[in-house]
Length: 406
Image 1 (cartoon, rainbow, N blue to C red):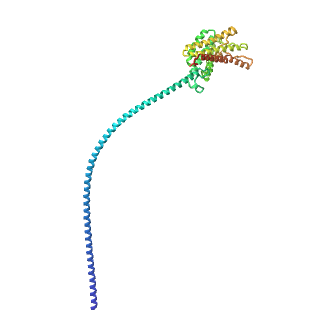
Image 2: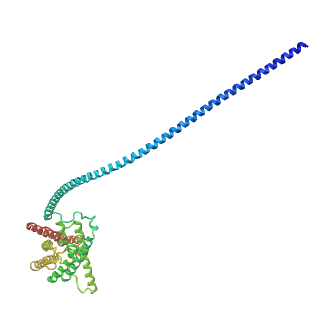
Image 3: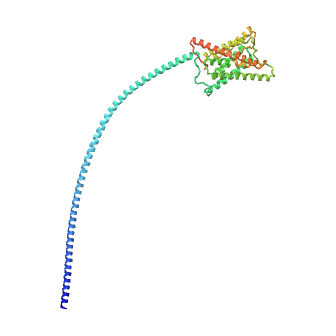
């Protein structure tokens, strides 16, 4: 029992010792921790003080820097102001100098430009004079060529652009056709009423008709004249054909008017007719027609030289027509014993019933129509062409300019 108690006591002692040592160890550890915490706190305080010192130093340096910057800015501003004032003065001086230089340069440039302008003006004037001389030479050559061309008997004397496609675009051609229609109508009425017995009346009436129609178409009023104008190239072929058609229609209208009056008067009067030609009188009648047509063509071509005086033109043309009629009457009445065989106008001759209305057969009638056309239309036109060429040849020998009716 005693041993067990000792053992219990020993064990309790050891337990207490272990507890004390544990307590001591715990105390020691706590002290160490406290010491470490104090050390850490001291380190923190040191670091804080260092940081504060550093911040104070930084602030001090910043204040110093700010002061230096302010001083530098002040100095810079003063320097800038001084520099700007100096630069402005320099700029003003340079501007003044540049303006003076520019003025001098401008003056020199103006003088140079004036000199250049004068030189340009002189060169342009010389070039213009050269061009003017060239133009005058070209014009002179063109005039000489035109004069030579116009004085050439076979040269074209009408507008080269006139053809079947362009002629109807010109309103003047319609006025000309109306003039030819009306003029031929009046001449046909005149010839079929007065005949060739009242020469003076016929001439006065023709002068009035030619004066009235001349400014419209040139007053051809006769296919003989129109054929001569076409052959000598004073008018285009298409214009000549249109004129002849207008003349034939005008003569036909005159015949219709006279026939209407005759019917209204119960056919008391008779319309004149052309005496029929026989084989014995055919060629002599044809020759007289050619001669009369030649006179008319020659007179008309000569009358064109007086185209500026319409009265003179009308007198010359009417005189030529009357001369041809008198010639035909004199030759046919005194030498051939014929009457009413000549009219010297193919359009009017058609209205004198030159075509035969009787015959043994159709061939004979057609042959008679062909002979009548040859005698009173074809050969008279040939005679008119000969008359025009004779006039042109005489004008060329005299040195006159060949002209048209325009």
